[in-house]
Image (cartoon, rainbow, N blue to C red; front, top):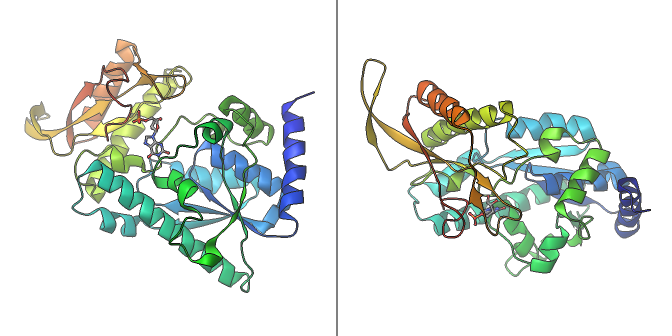
Length: 324
Ligand code: XMP
């Protein structure tokens, strides 16, 4: 019988056989794949797994807490958080080109992760972390594509340019699974609902949802607008109906508005709700008008920098899901 429990047992046994008494490291992104992969490995080898969560400052509201608090209490995993917010902001200063942003975020991510690994190795008395845990799924294996940002570590982990002692043996316990199976395994392992059913979120995070230069103030504005949109979609019970709903800040665009007592000259945010099976193609989601209205009213009332909310009604193709 191919039950979820049997998948867990089989993978735990395999991981034990592969890792032996070695040490493993896993980069958590907050997403379901790395979270489930790490939870399986934790079950197999306990504290010989260390998870590293890089806070690049491009996260949405509450995401760091979800990992540090909810995920750790559900799994008991040993977690190291690296606060790299200043570093990423510095590296992104003055950059507006989308590809440049992605490259910079990917590069910095790998550097921070490498340094974390070296620090952990030193802490373990020079004992190497030989194994790298990755949440590679079956479709990734077939496609063998790869994004940027957090996902970049996939294609770069042992490519030229890294010191020899940073080459890892990969542990990929989800290689035979599809996304829905991964979610079931996550639930079986007792992971929080917010992680098991999290919608896709790009590795470069809010960095590619600010059209224009990424700054601390703009991140704060976008984070506030995004949190409102997510809150209202969740309250309306729509989370499972939409694939994801990026909120995009048009930071270099201003328009005139009237808020409170006077004229404003603020920024628009774009709502990009999409329906999709696999993100290769997508349709814009026909959200109920009353939900759109609540999102719009709340954002313009609660986020002073934003005076206009617009809806993206483009399918993919021709539009991609993200704006950058
Ligand atoms: P696009 O914008 O290409 O996005 O239609 C397709 C899906 O991929 C996500 N996405 C990314 N995920 N790193 C990721 O891990 C990235 O660089 C990246 N770019 C886009 C996007 O959110 C959507 O689900």
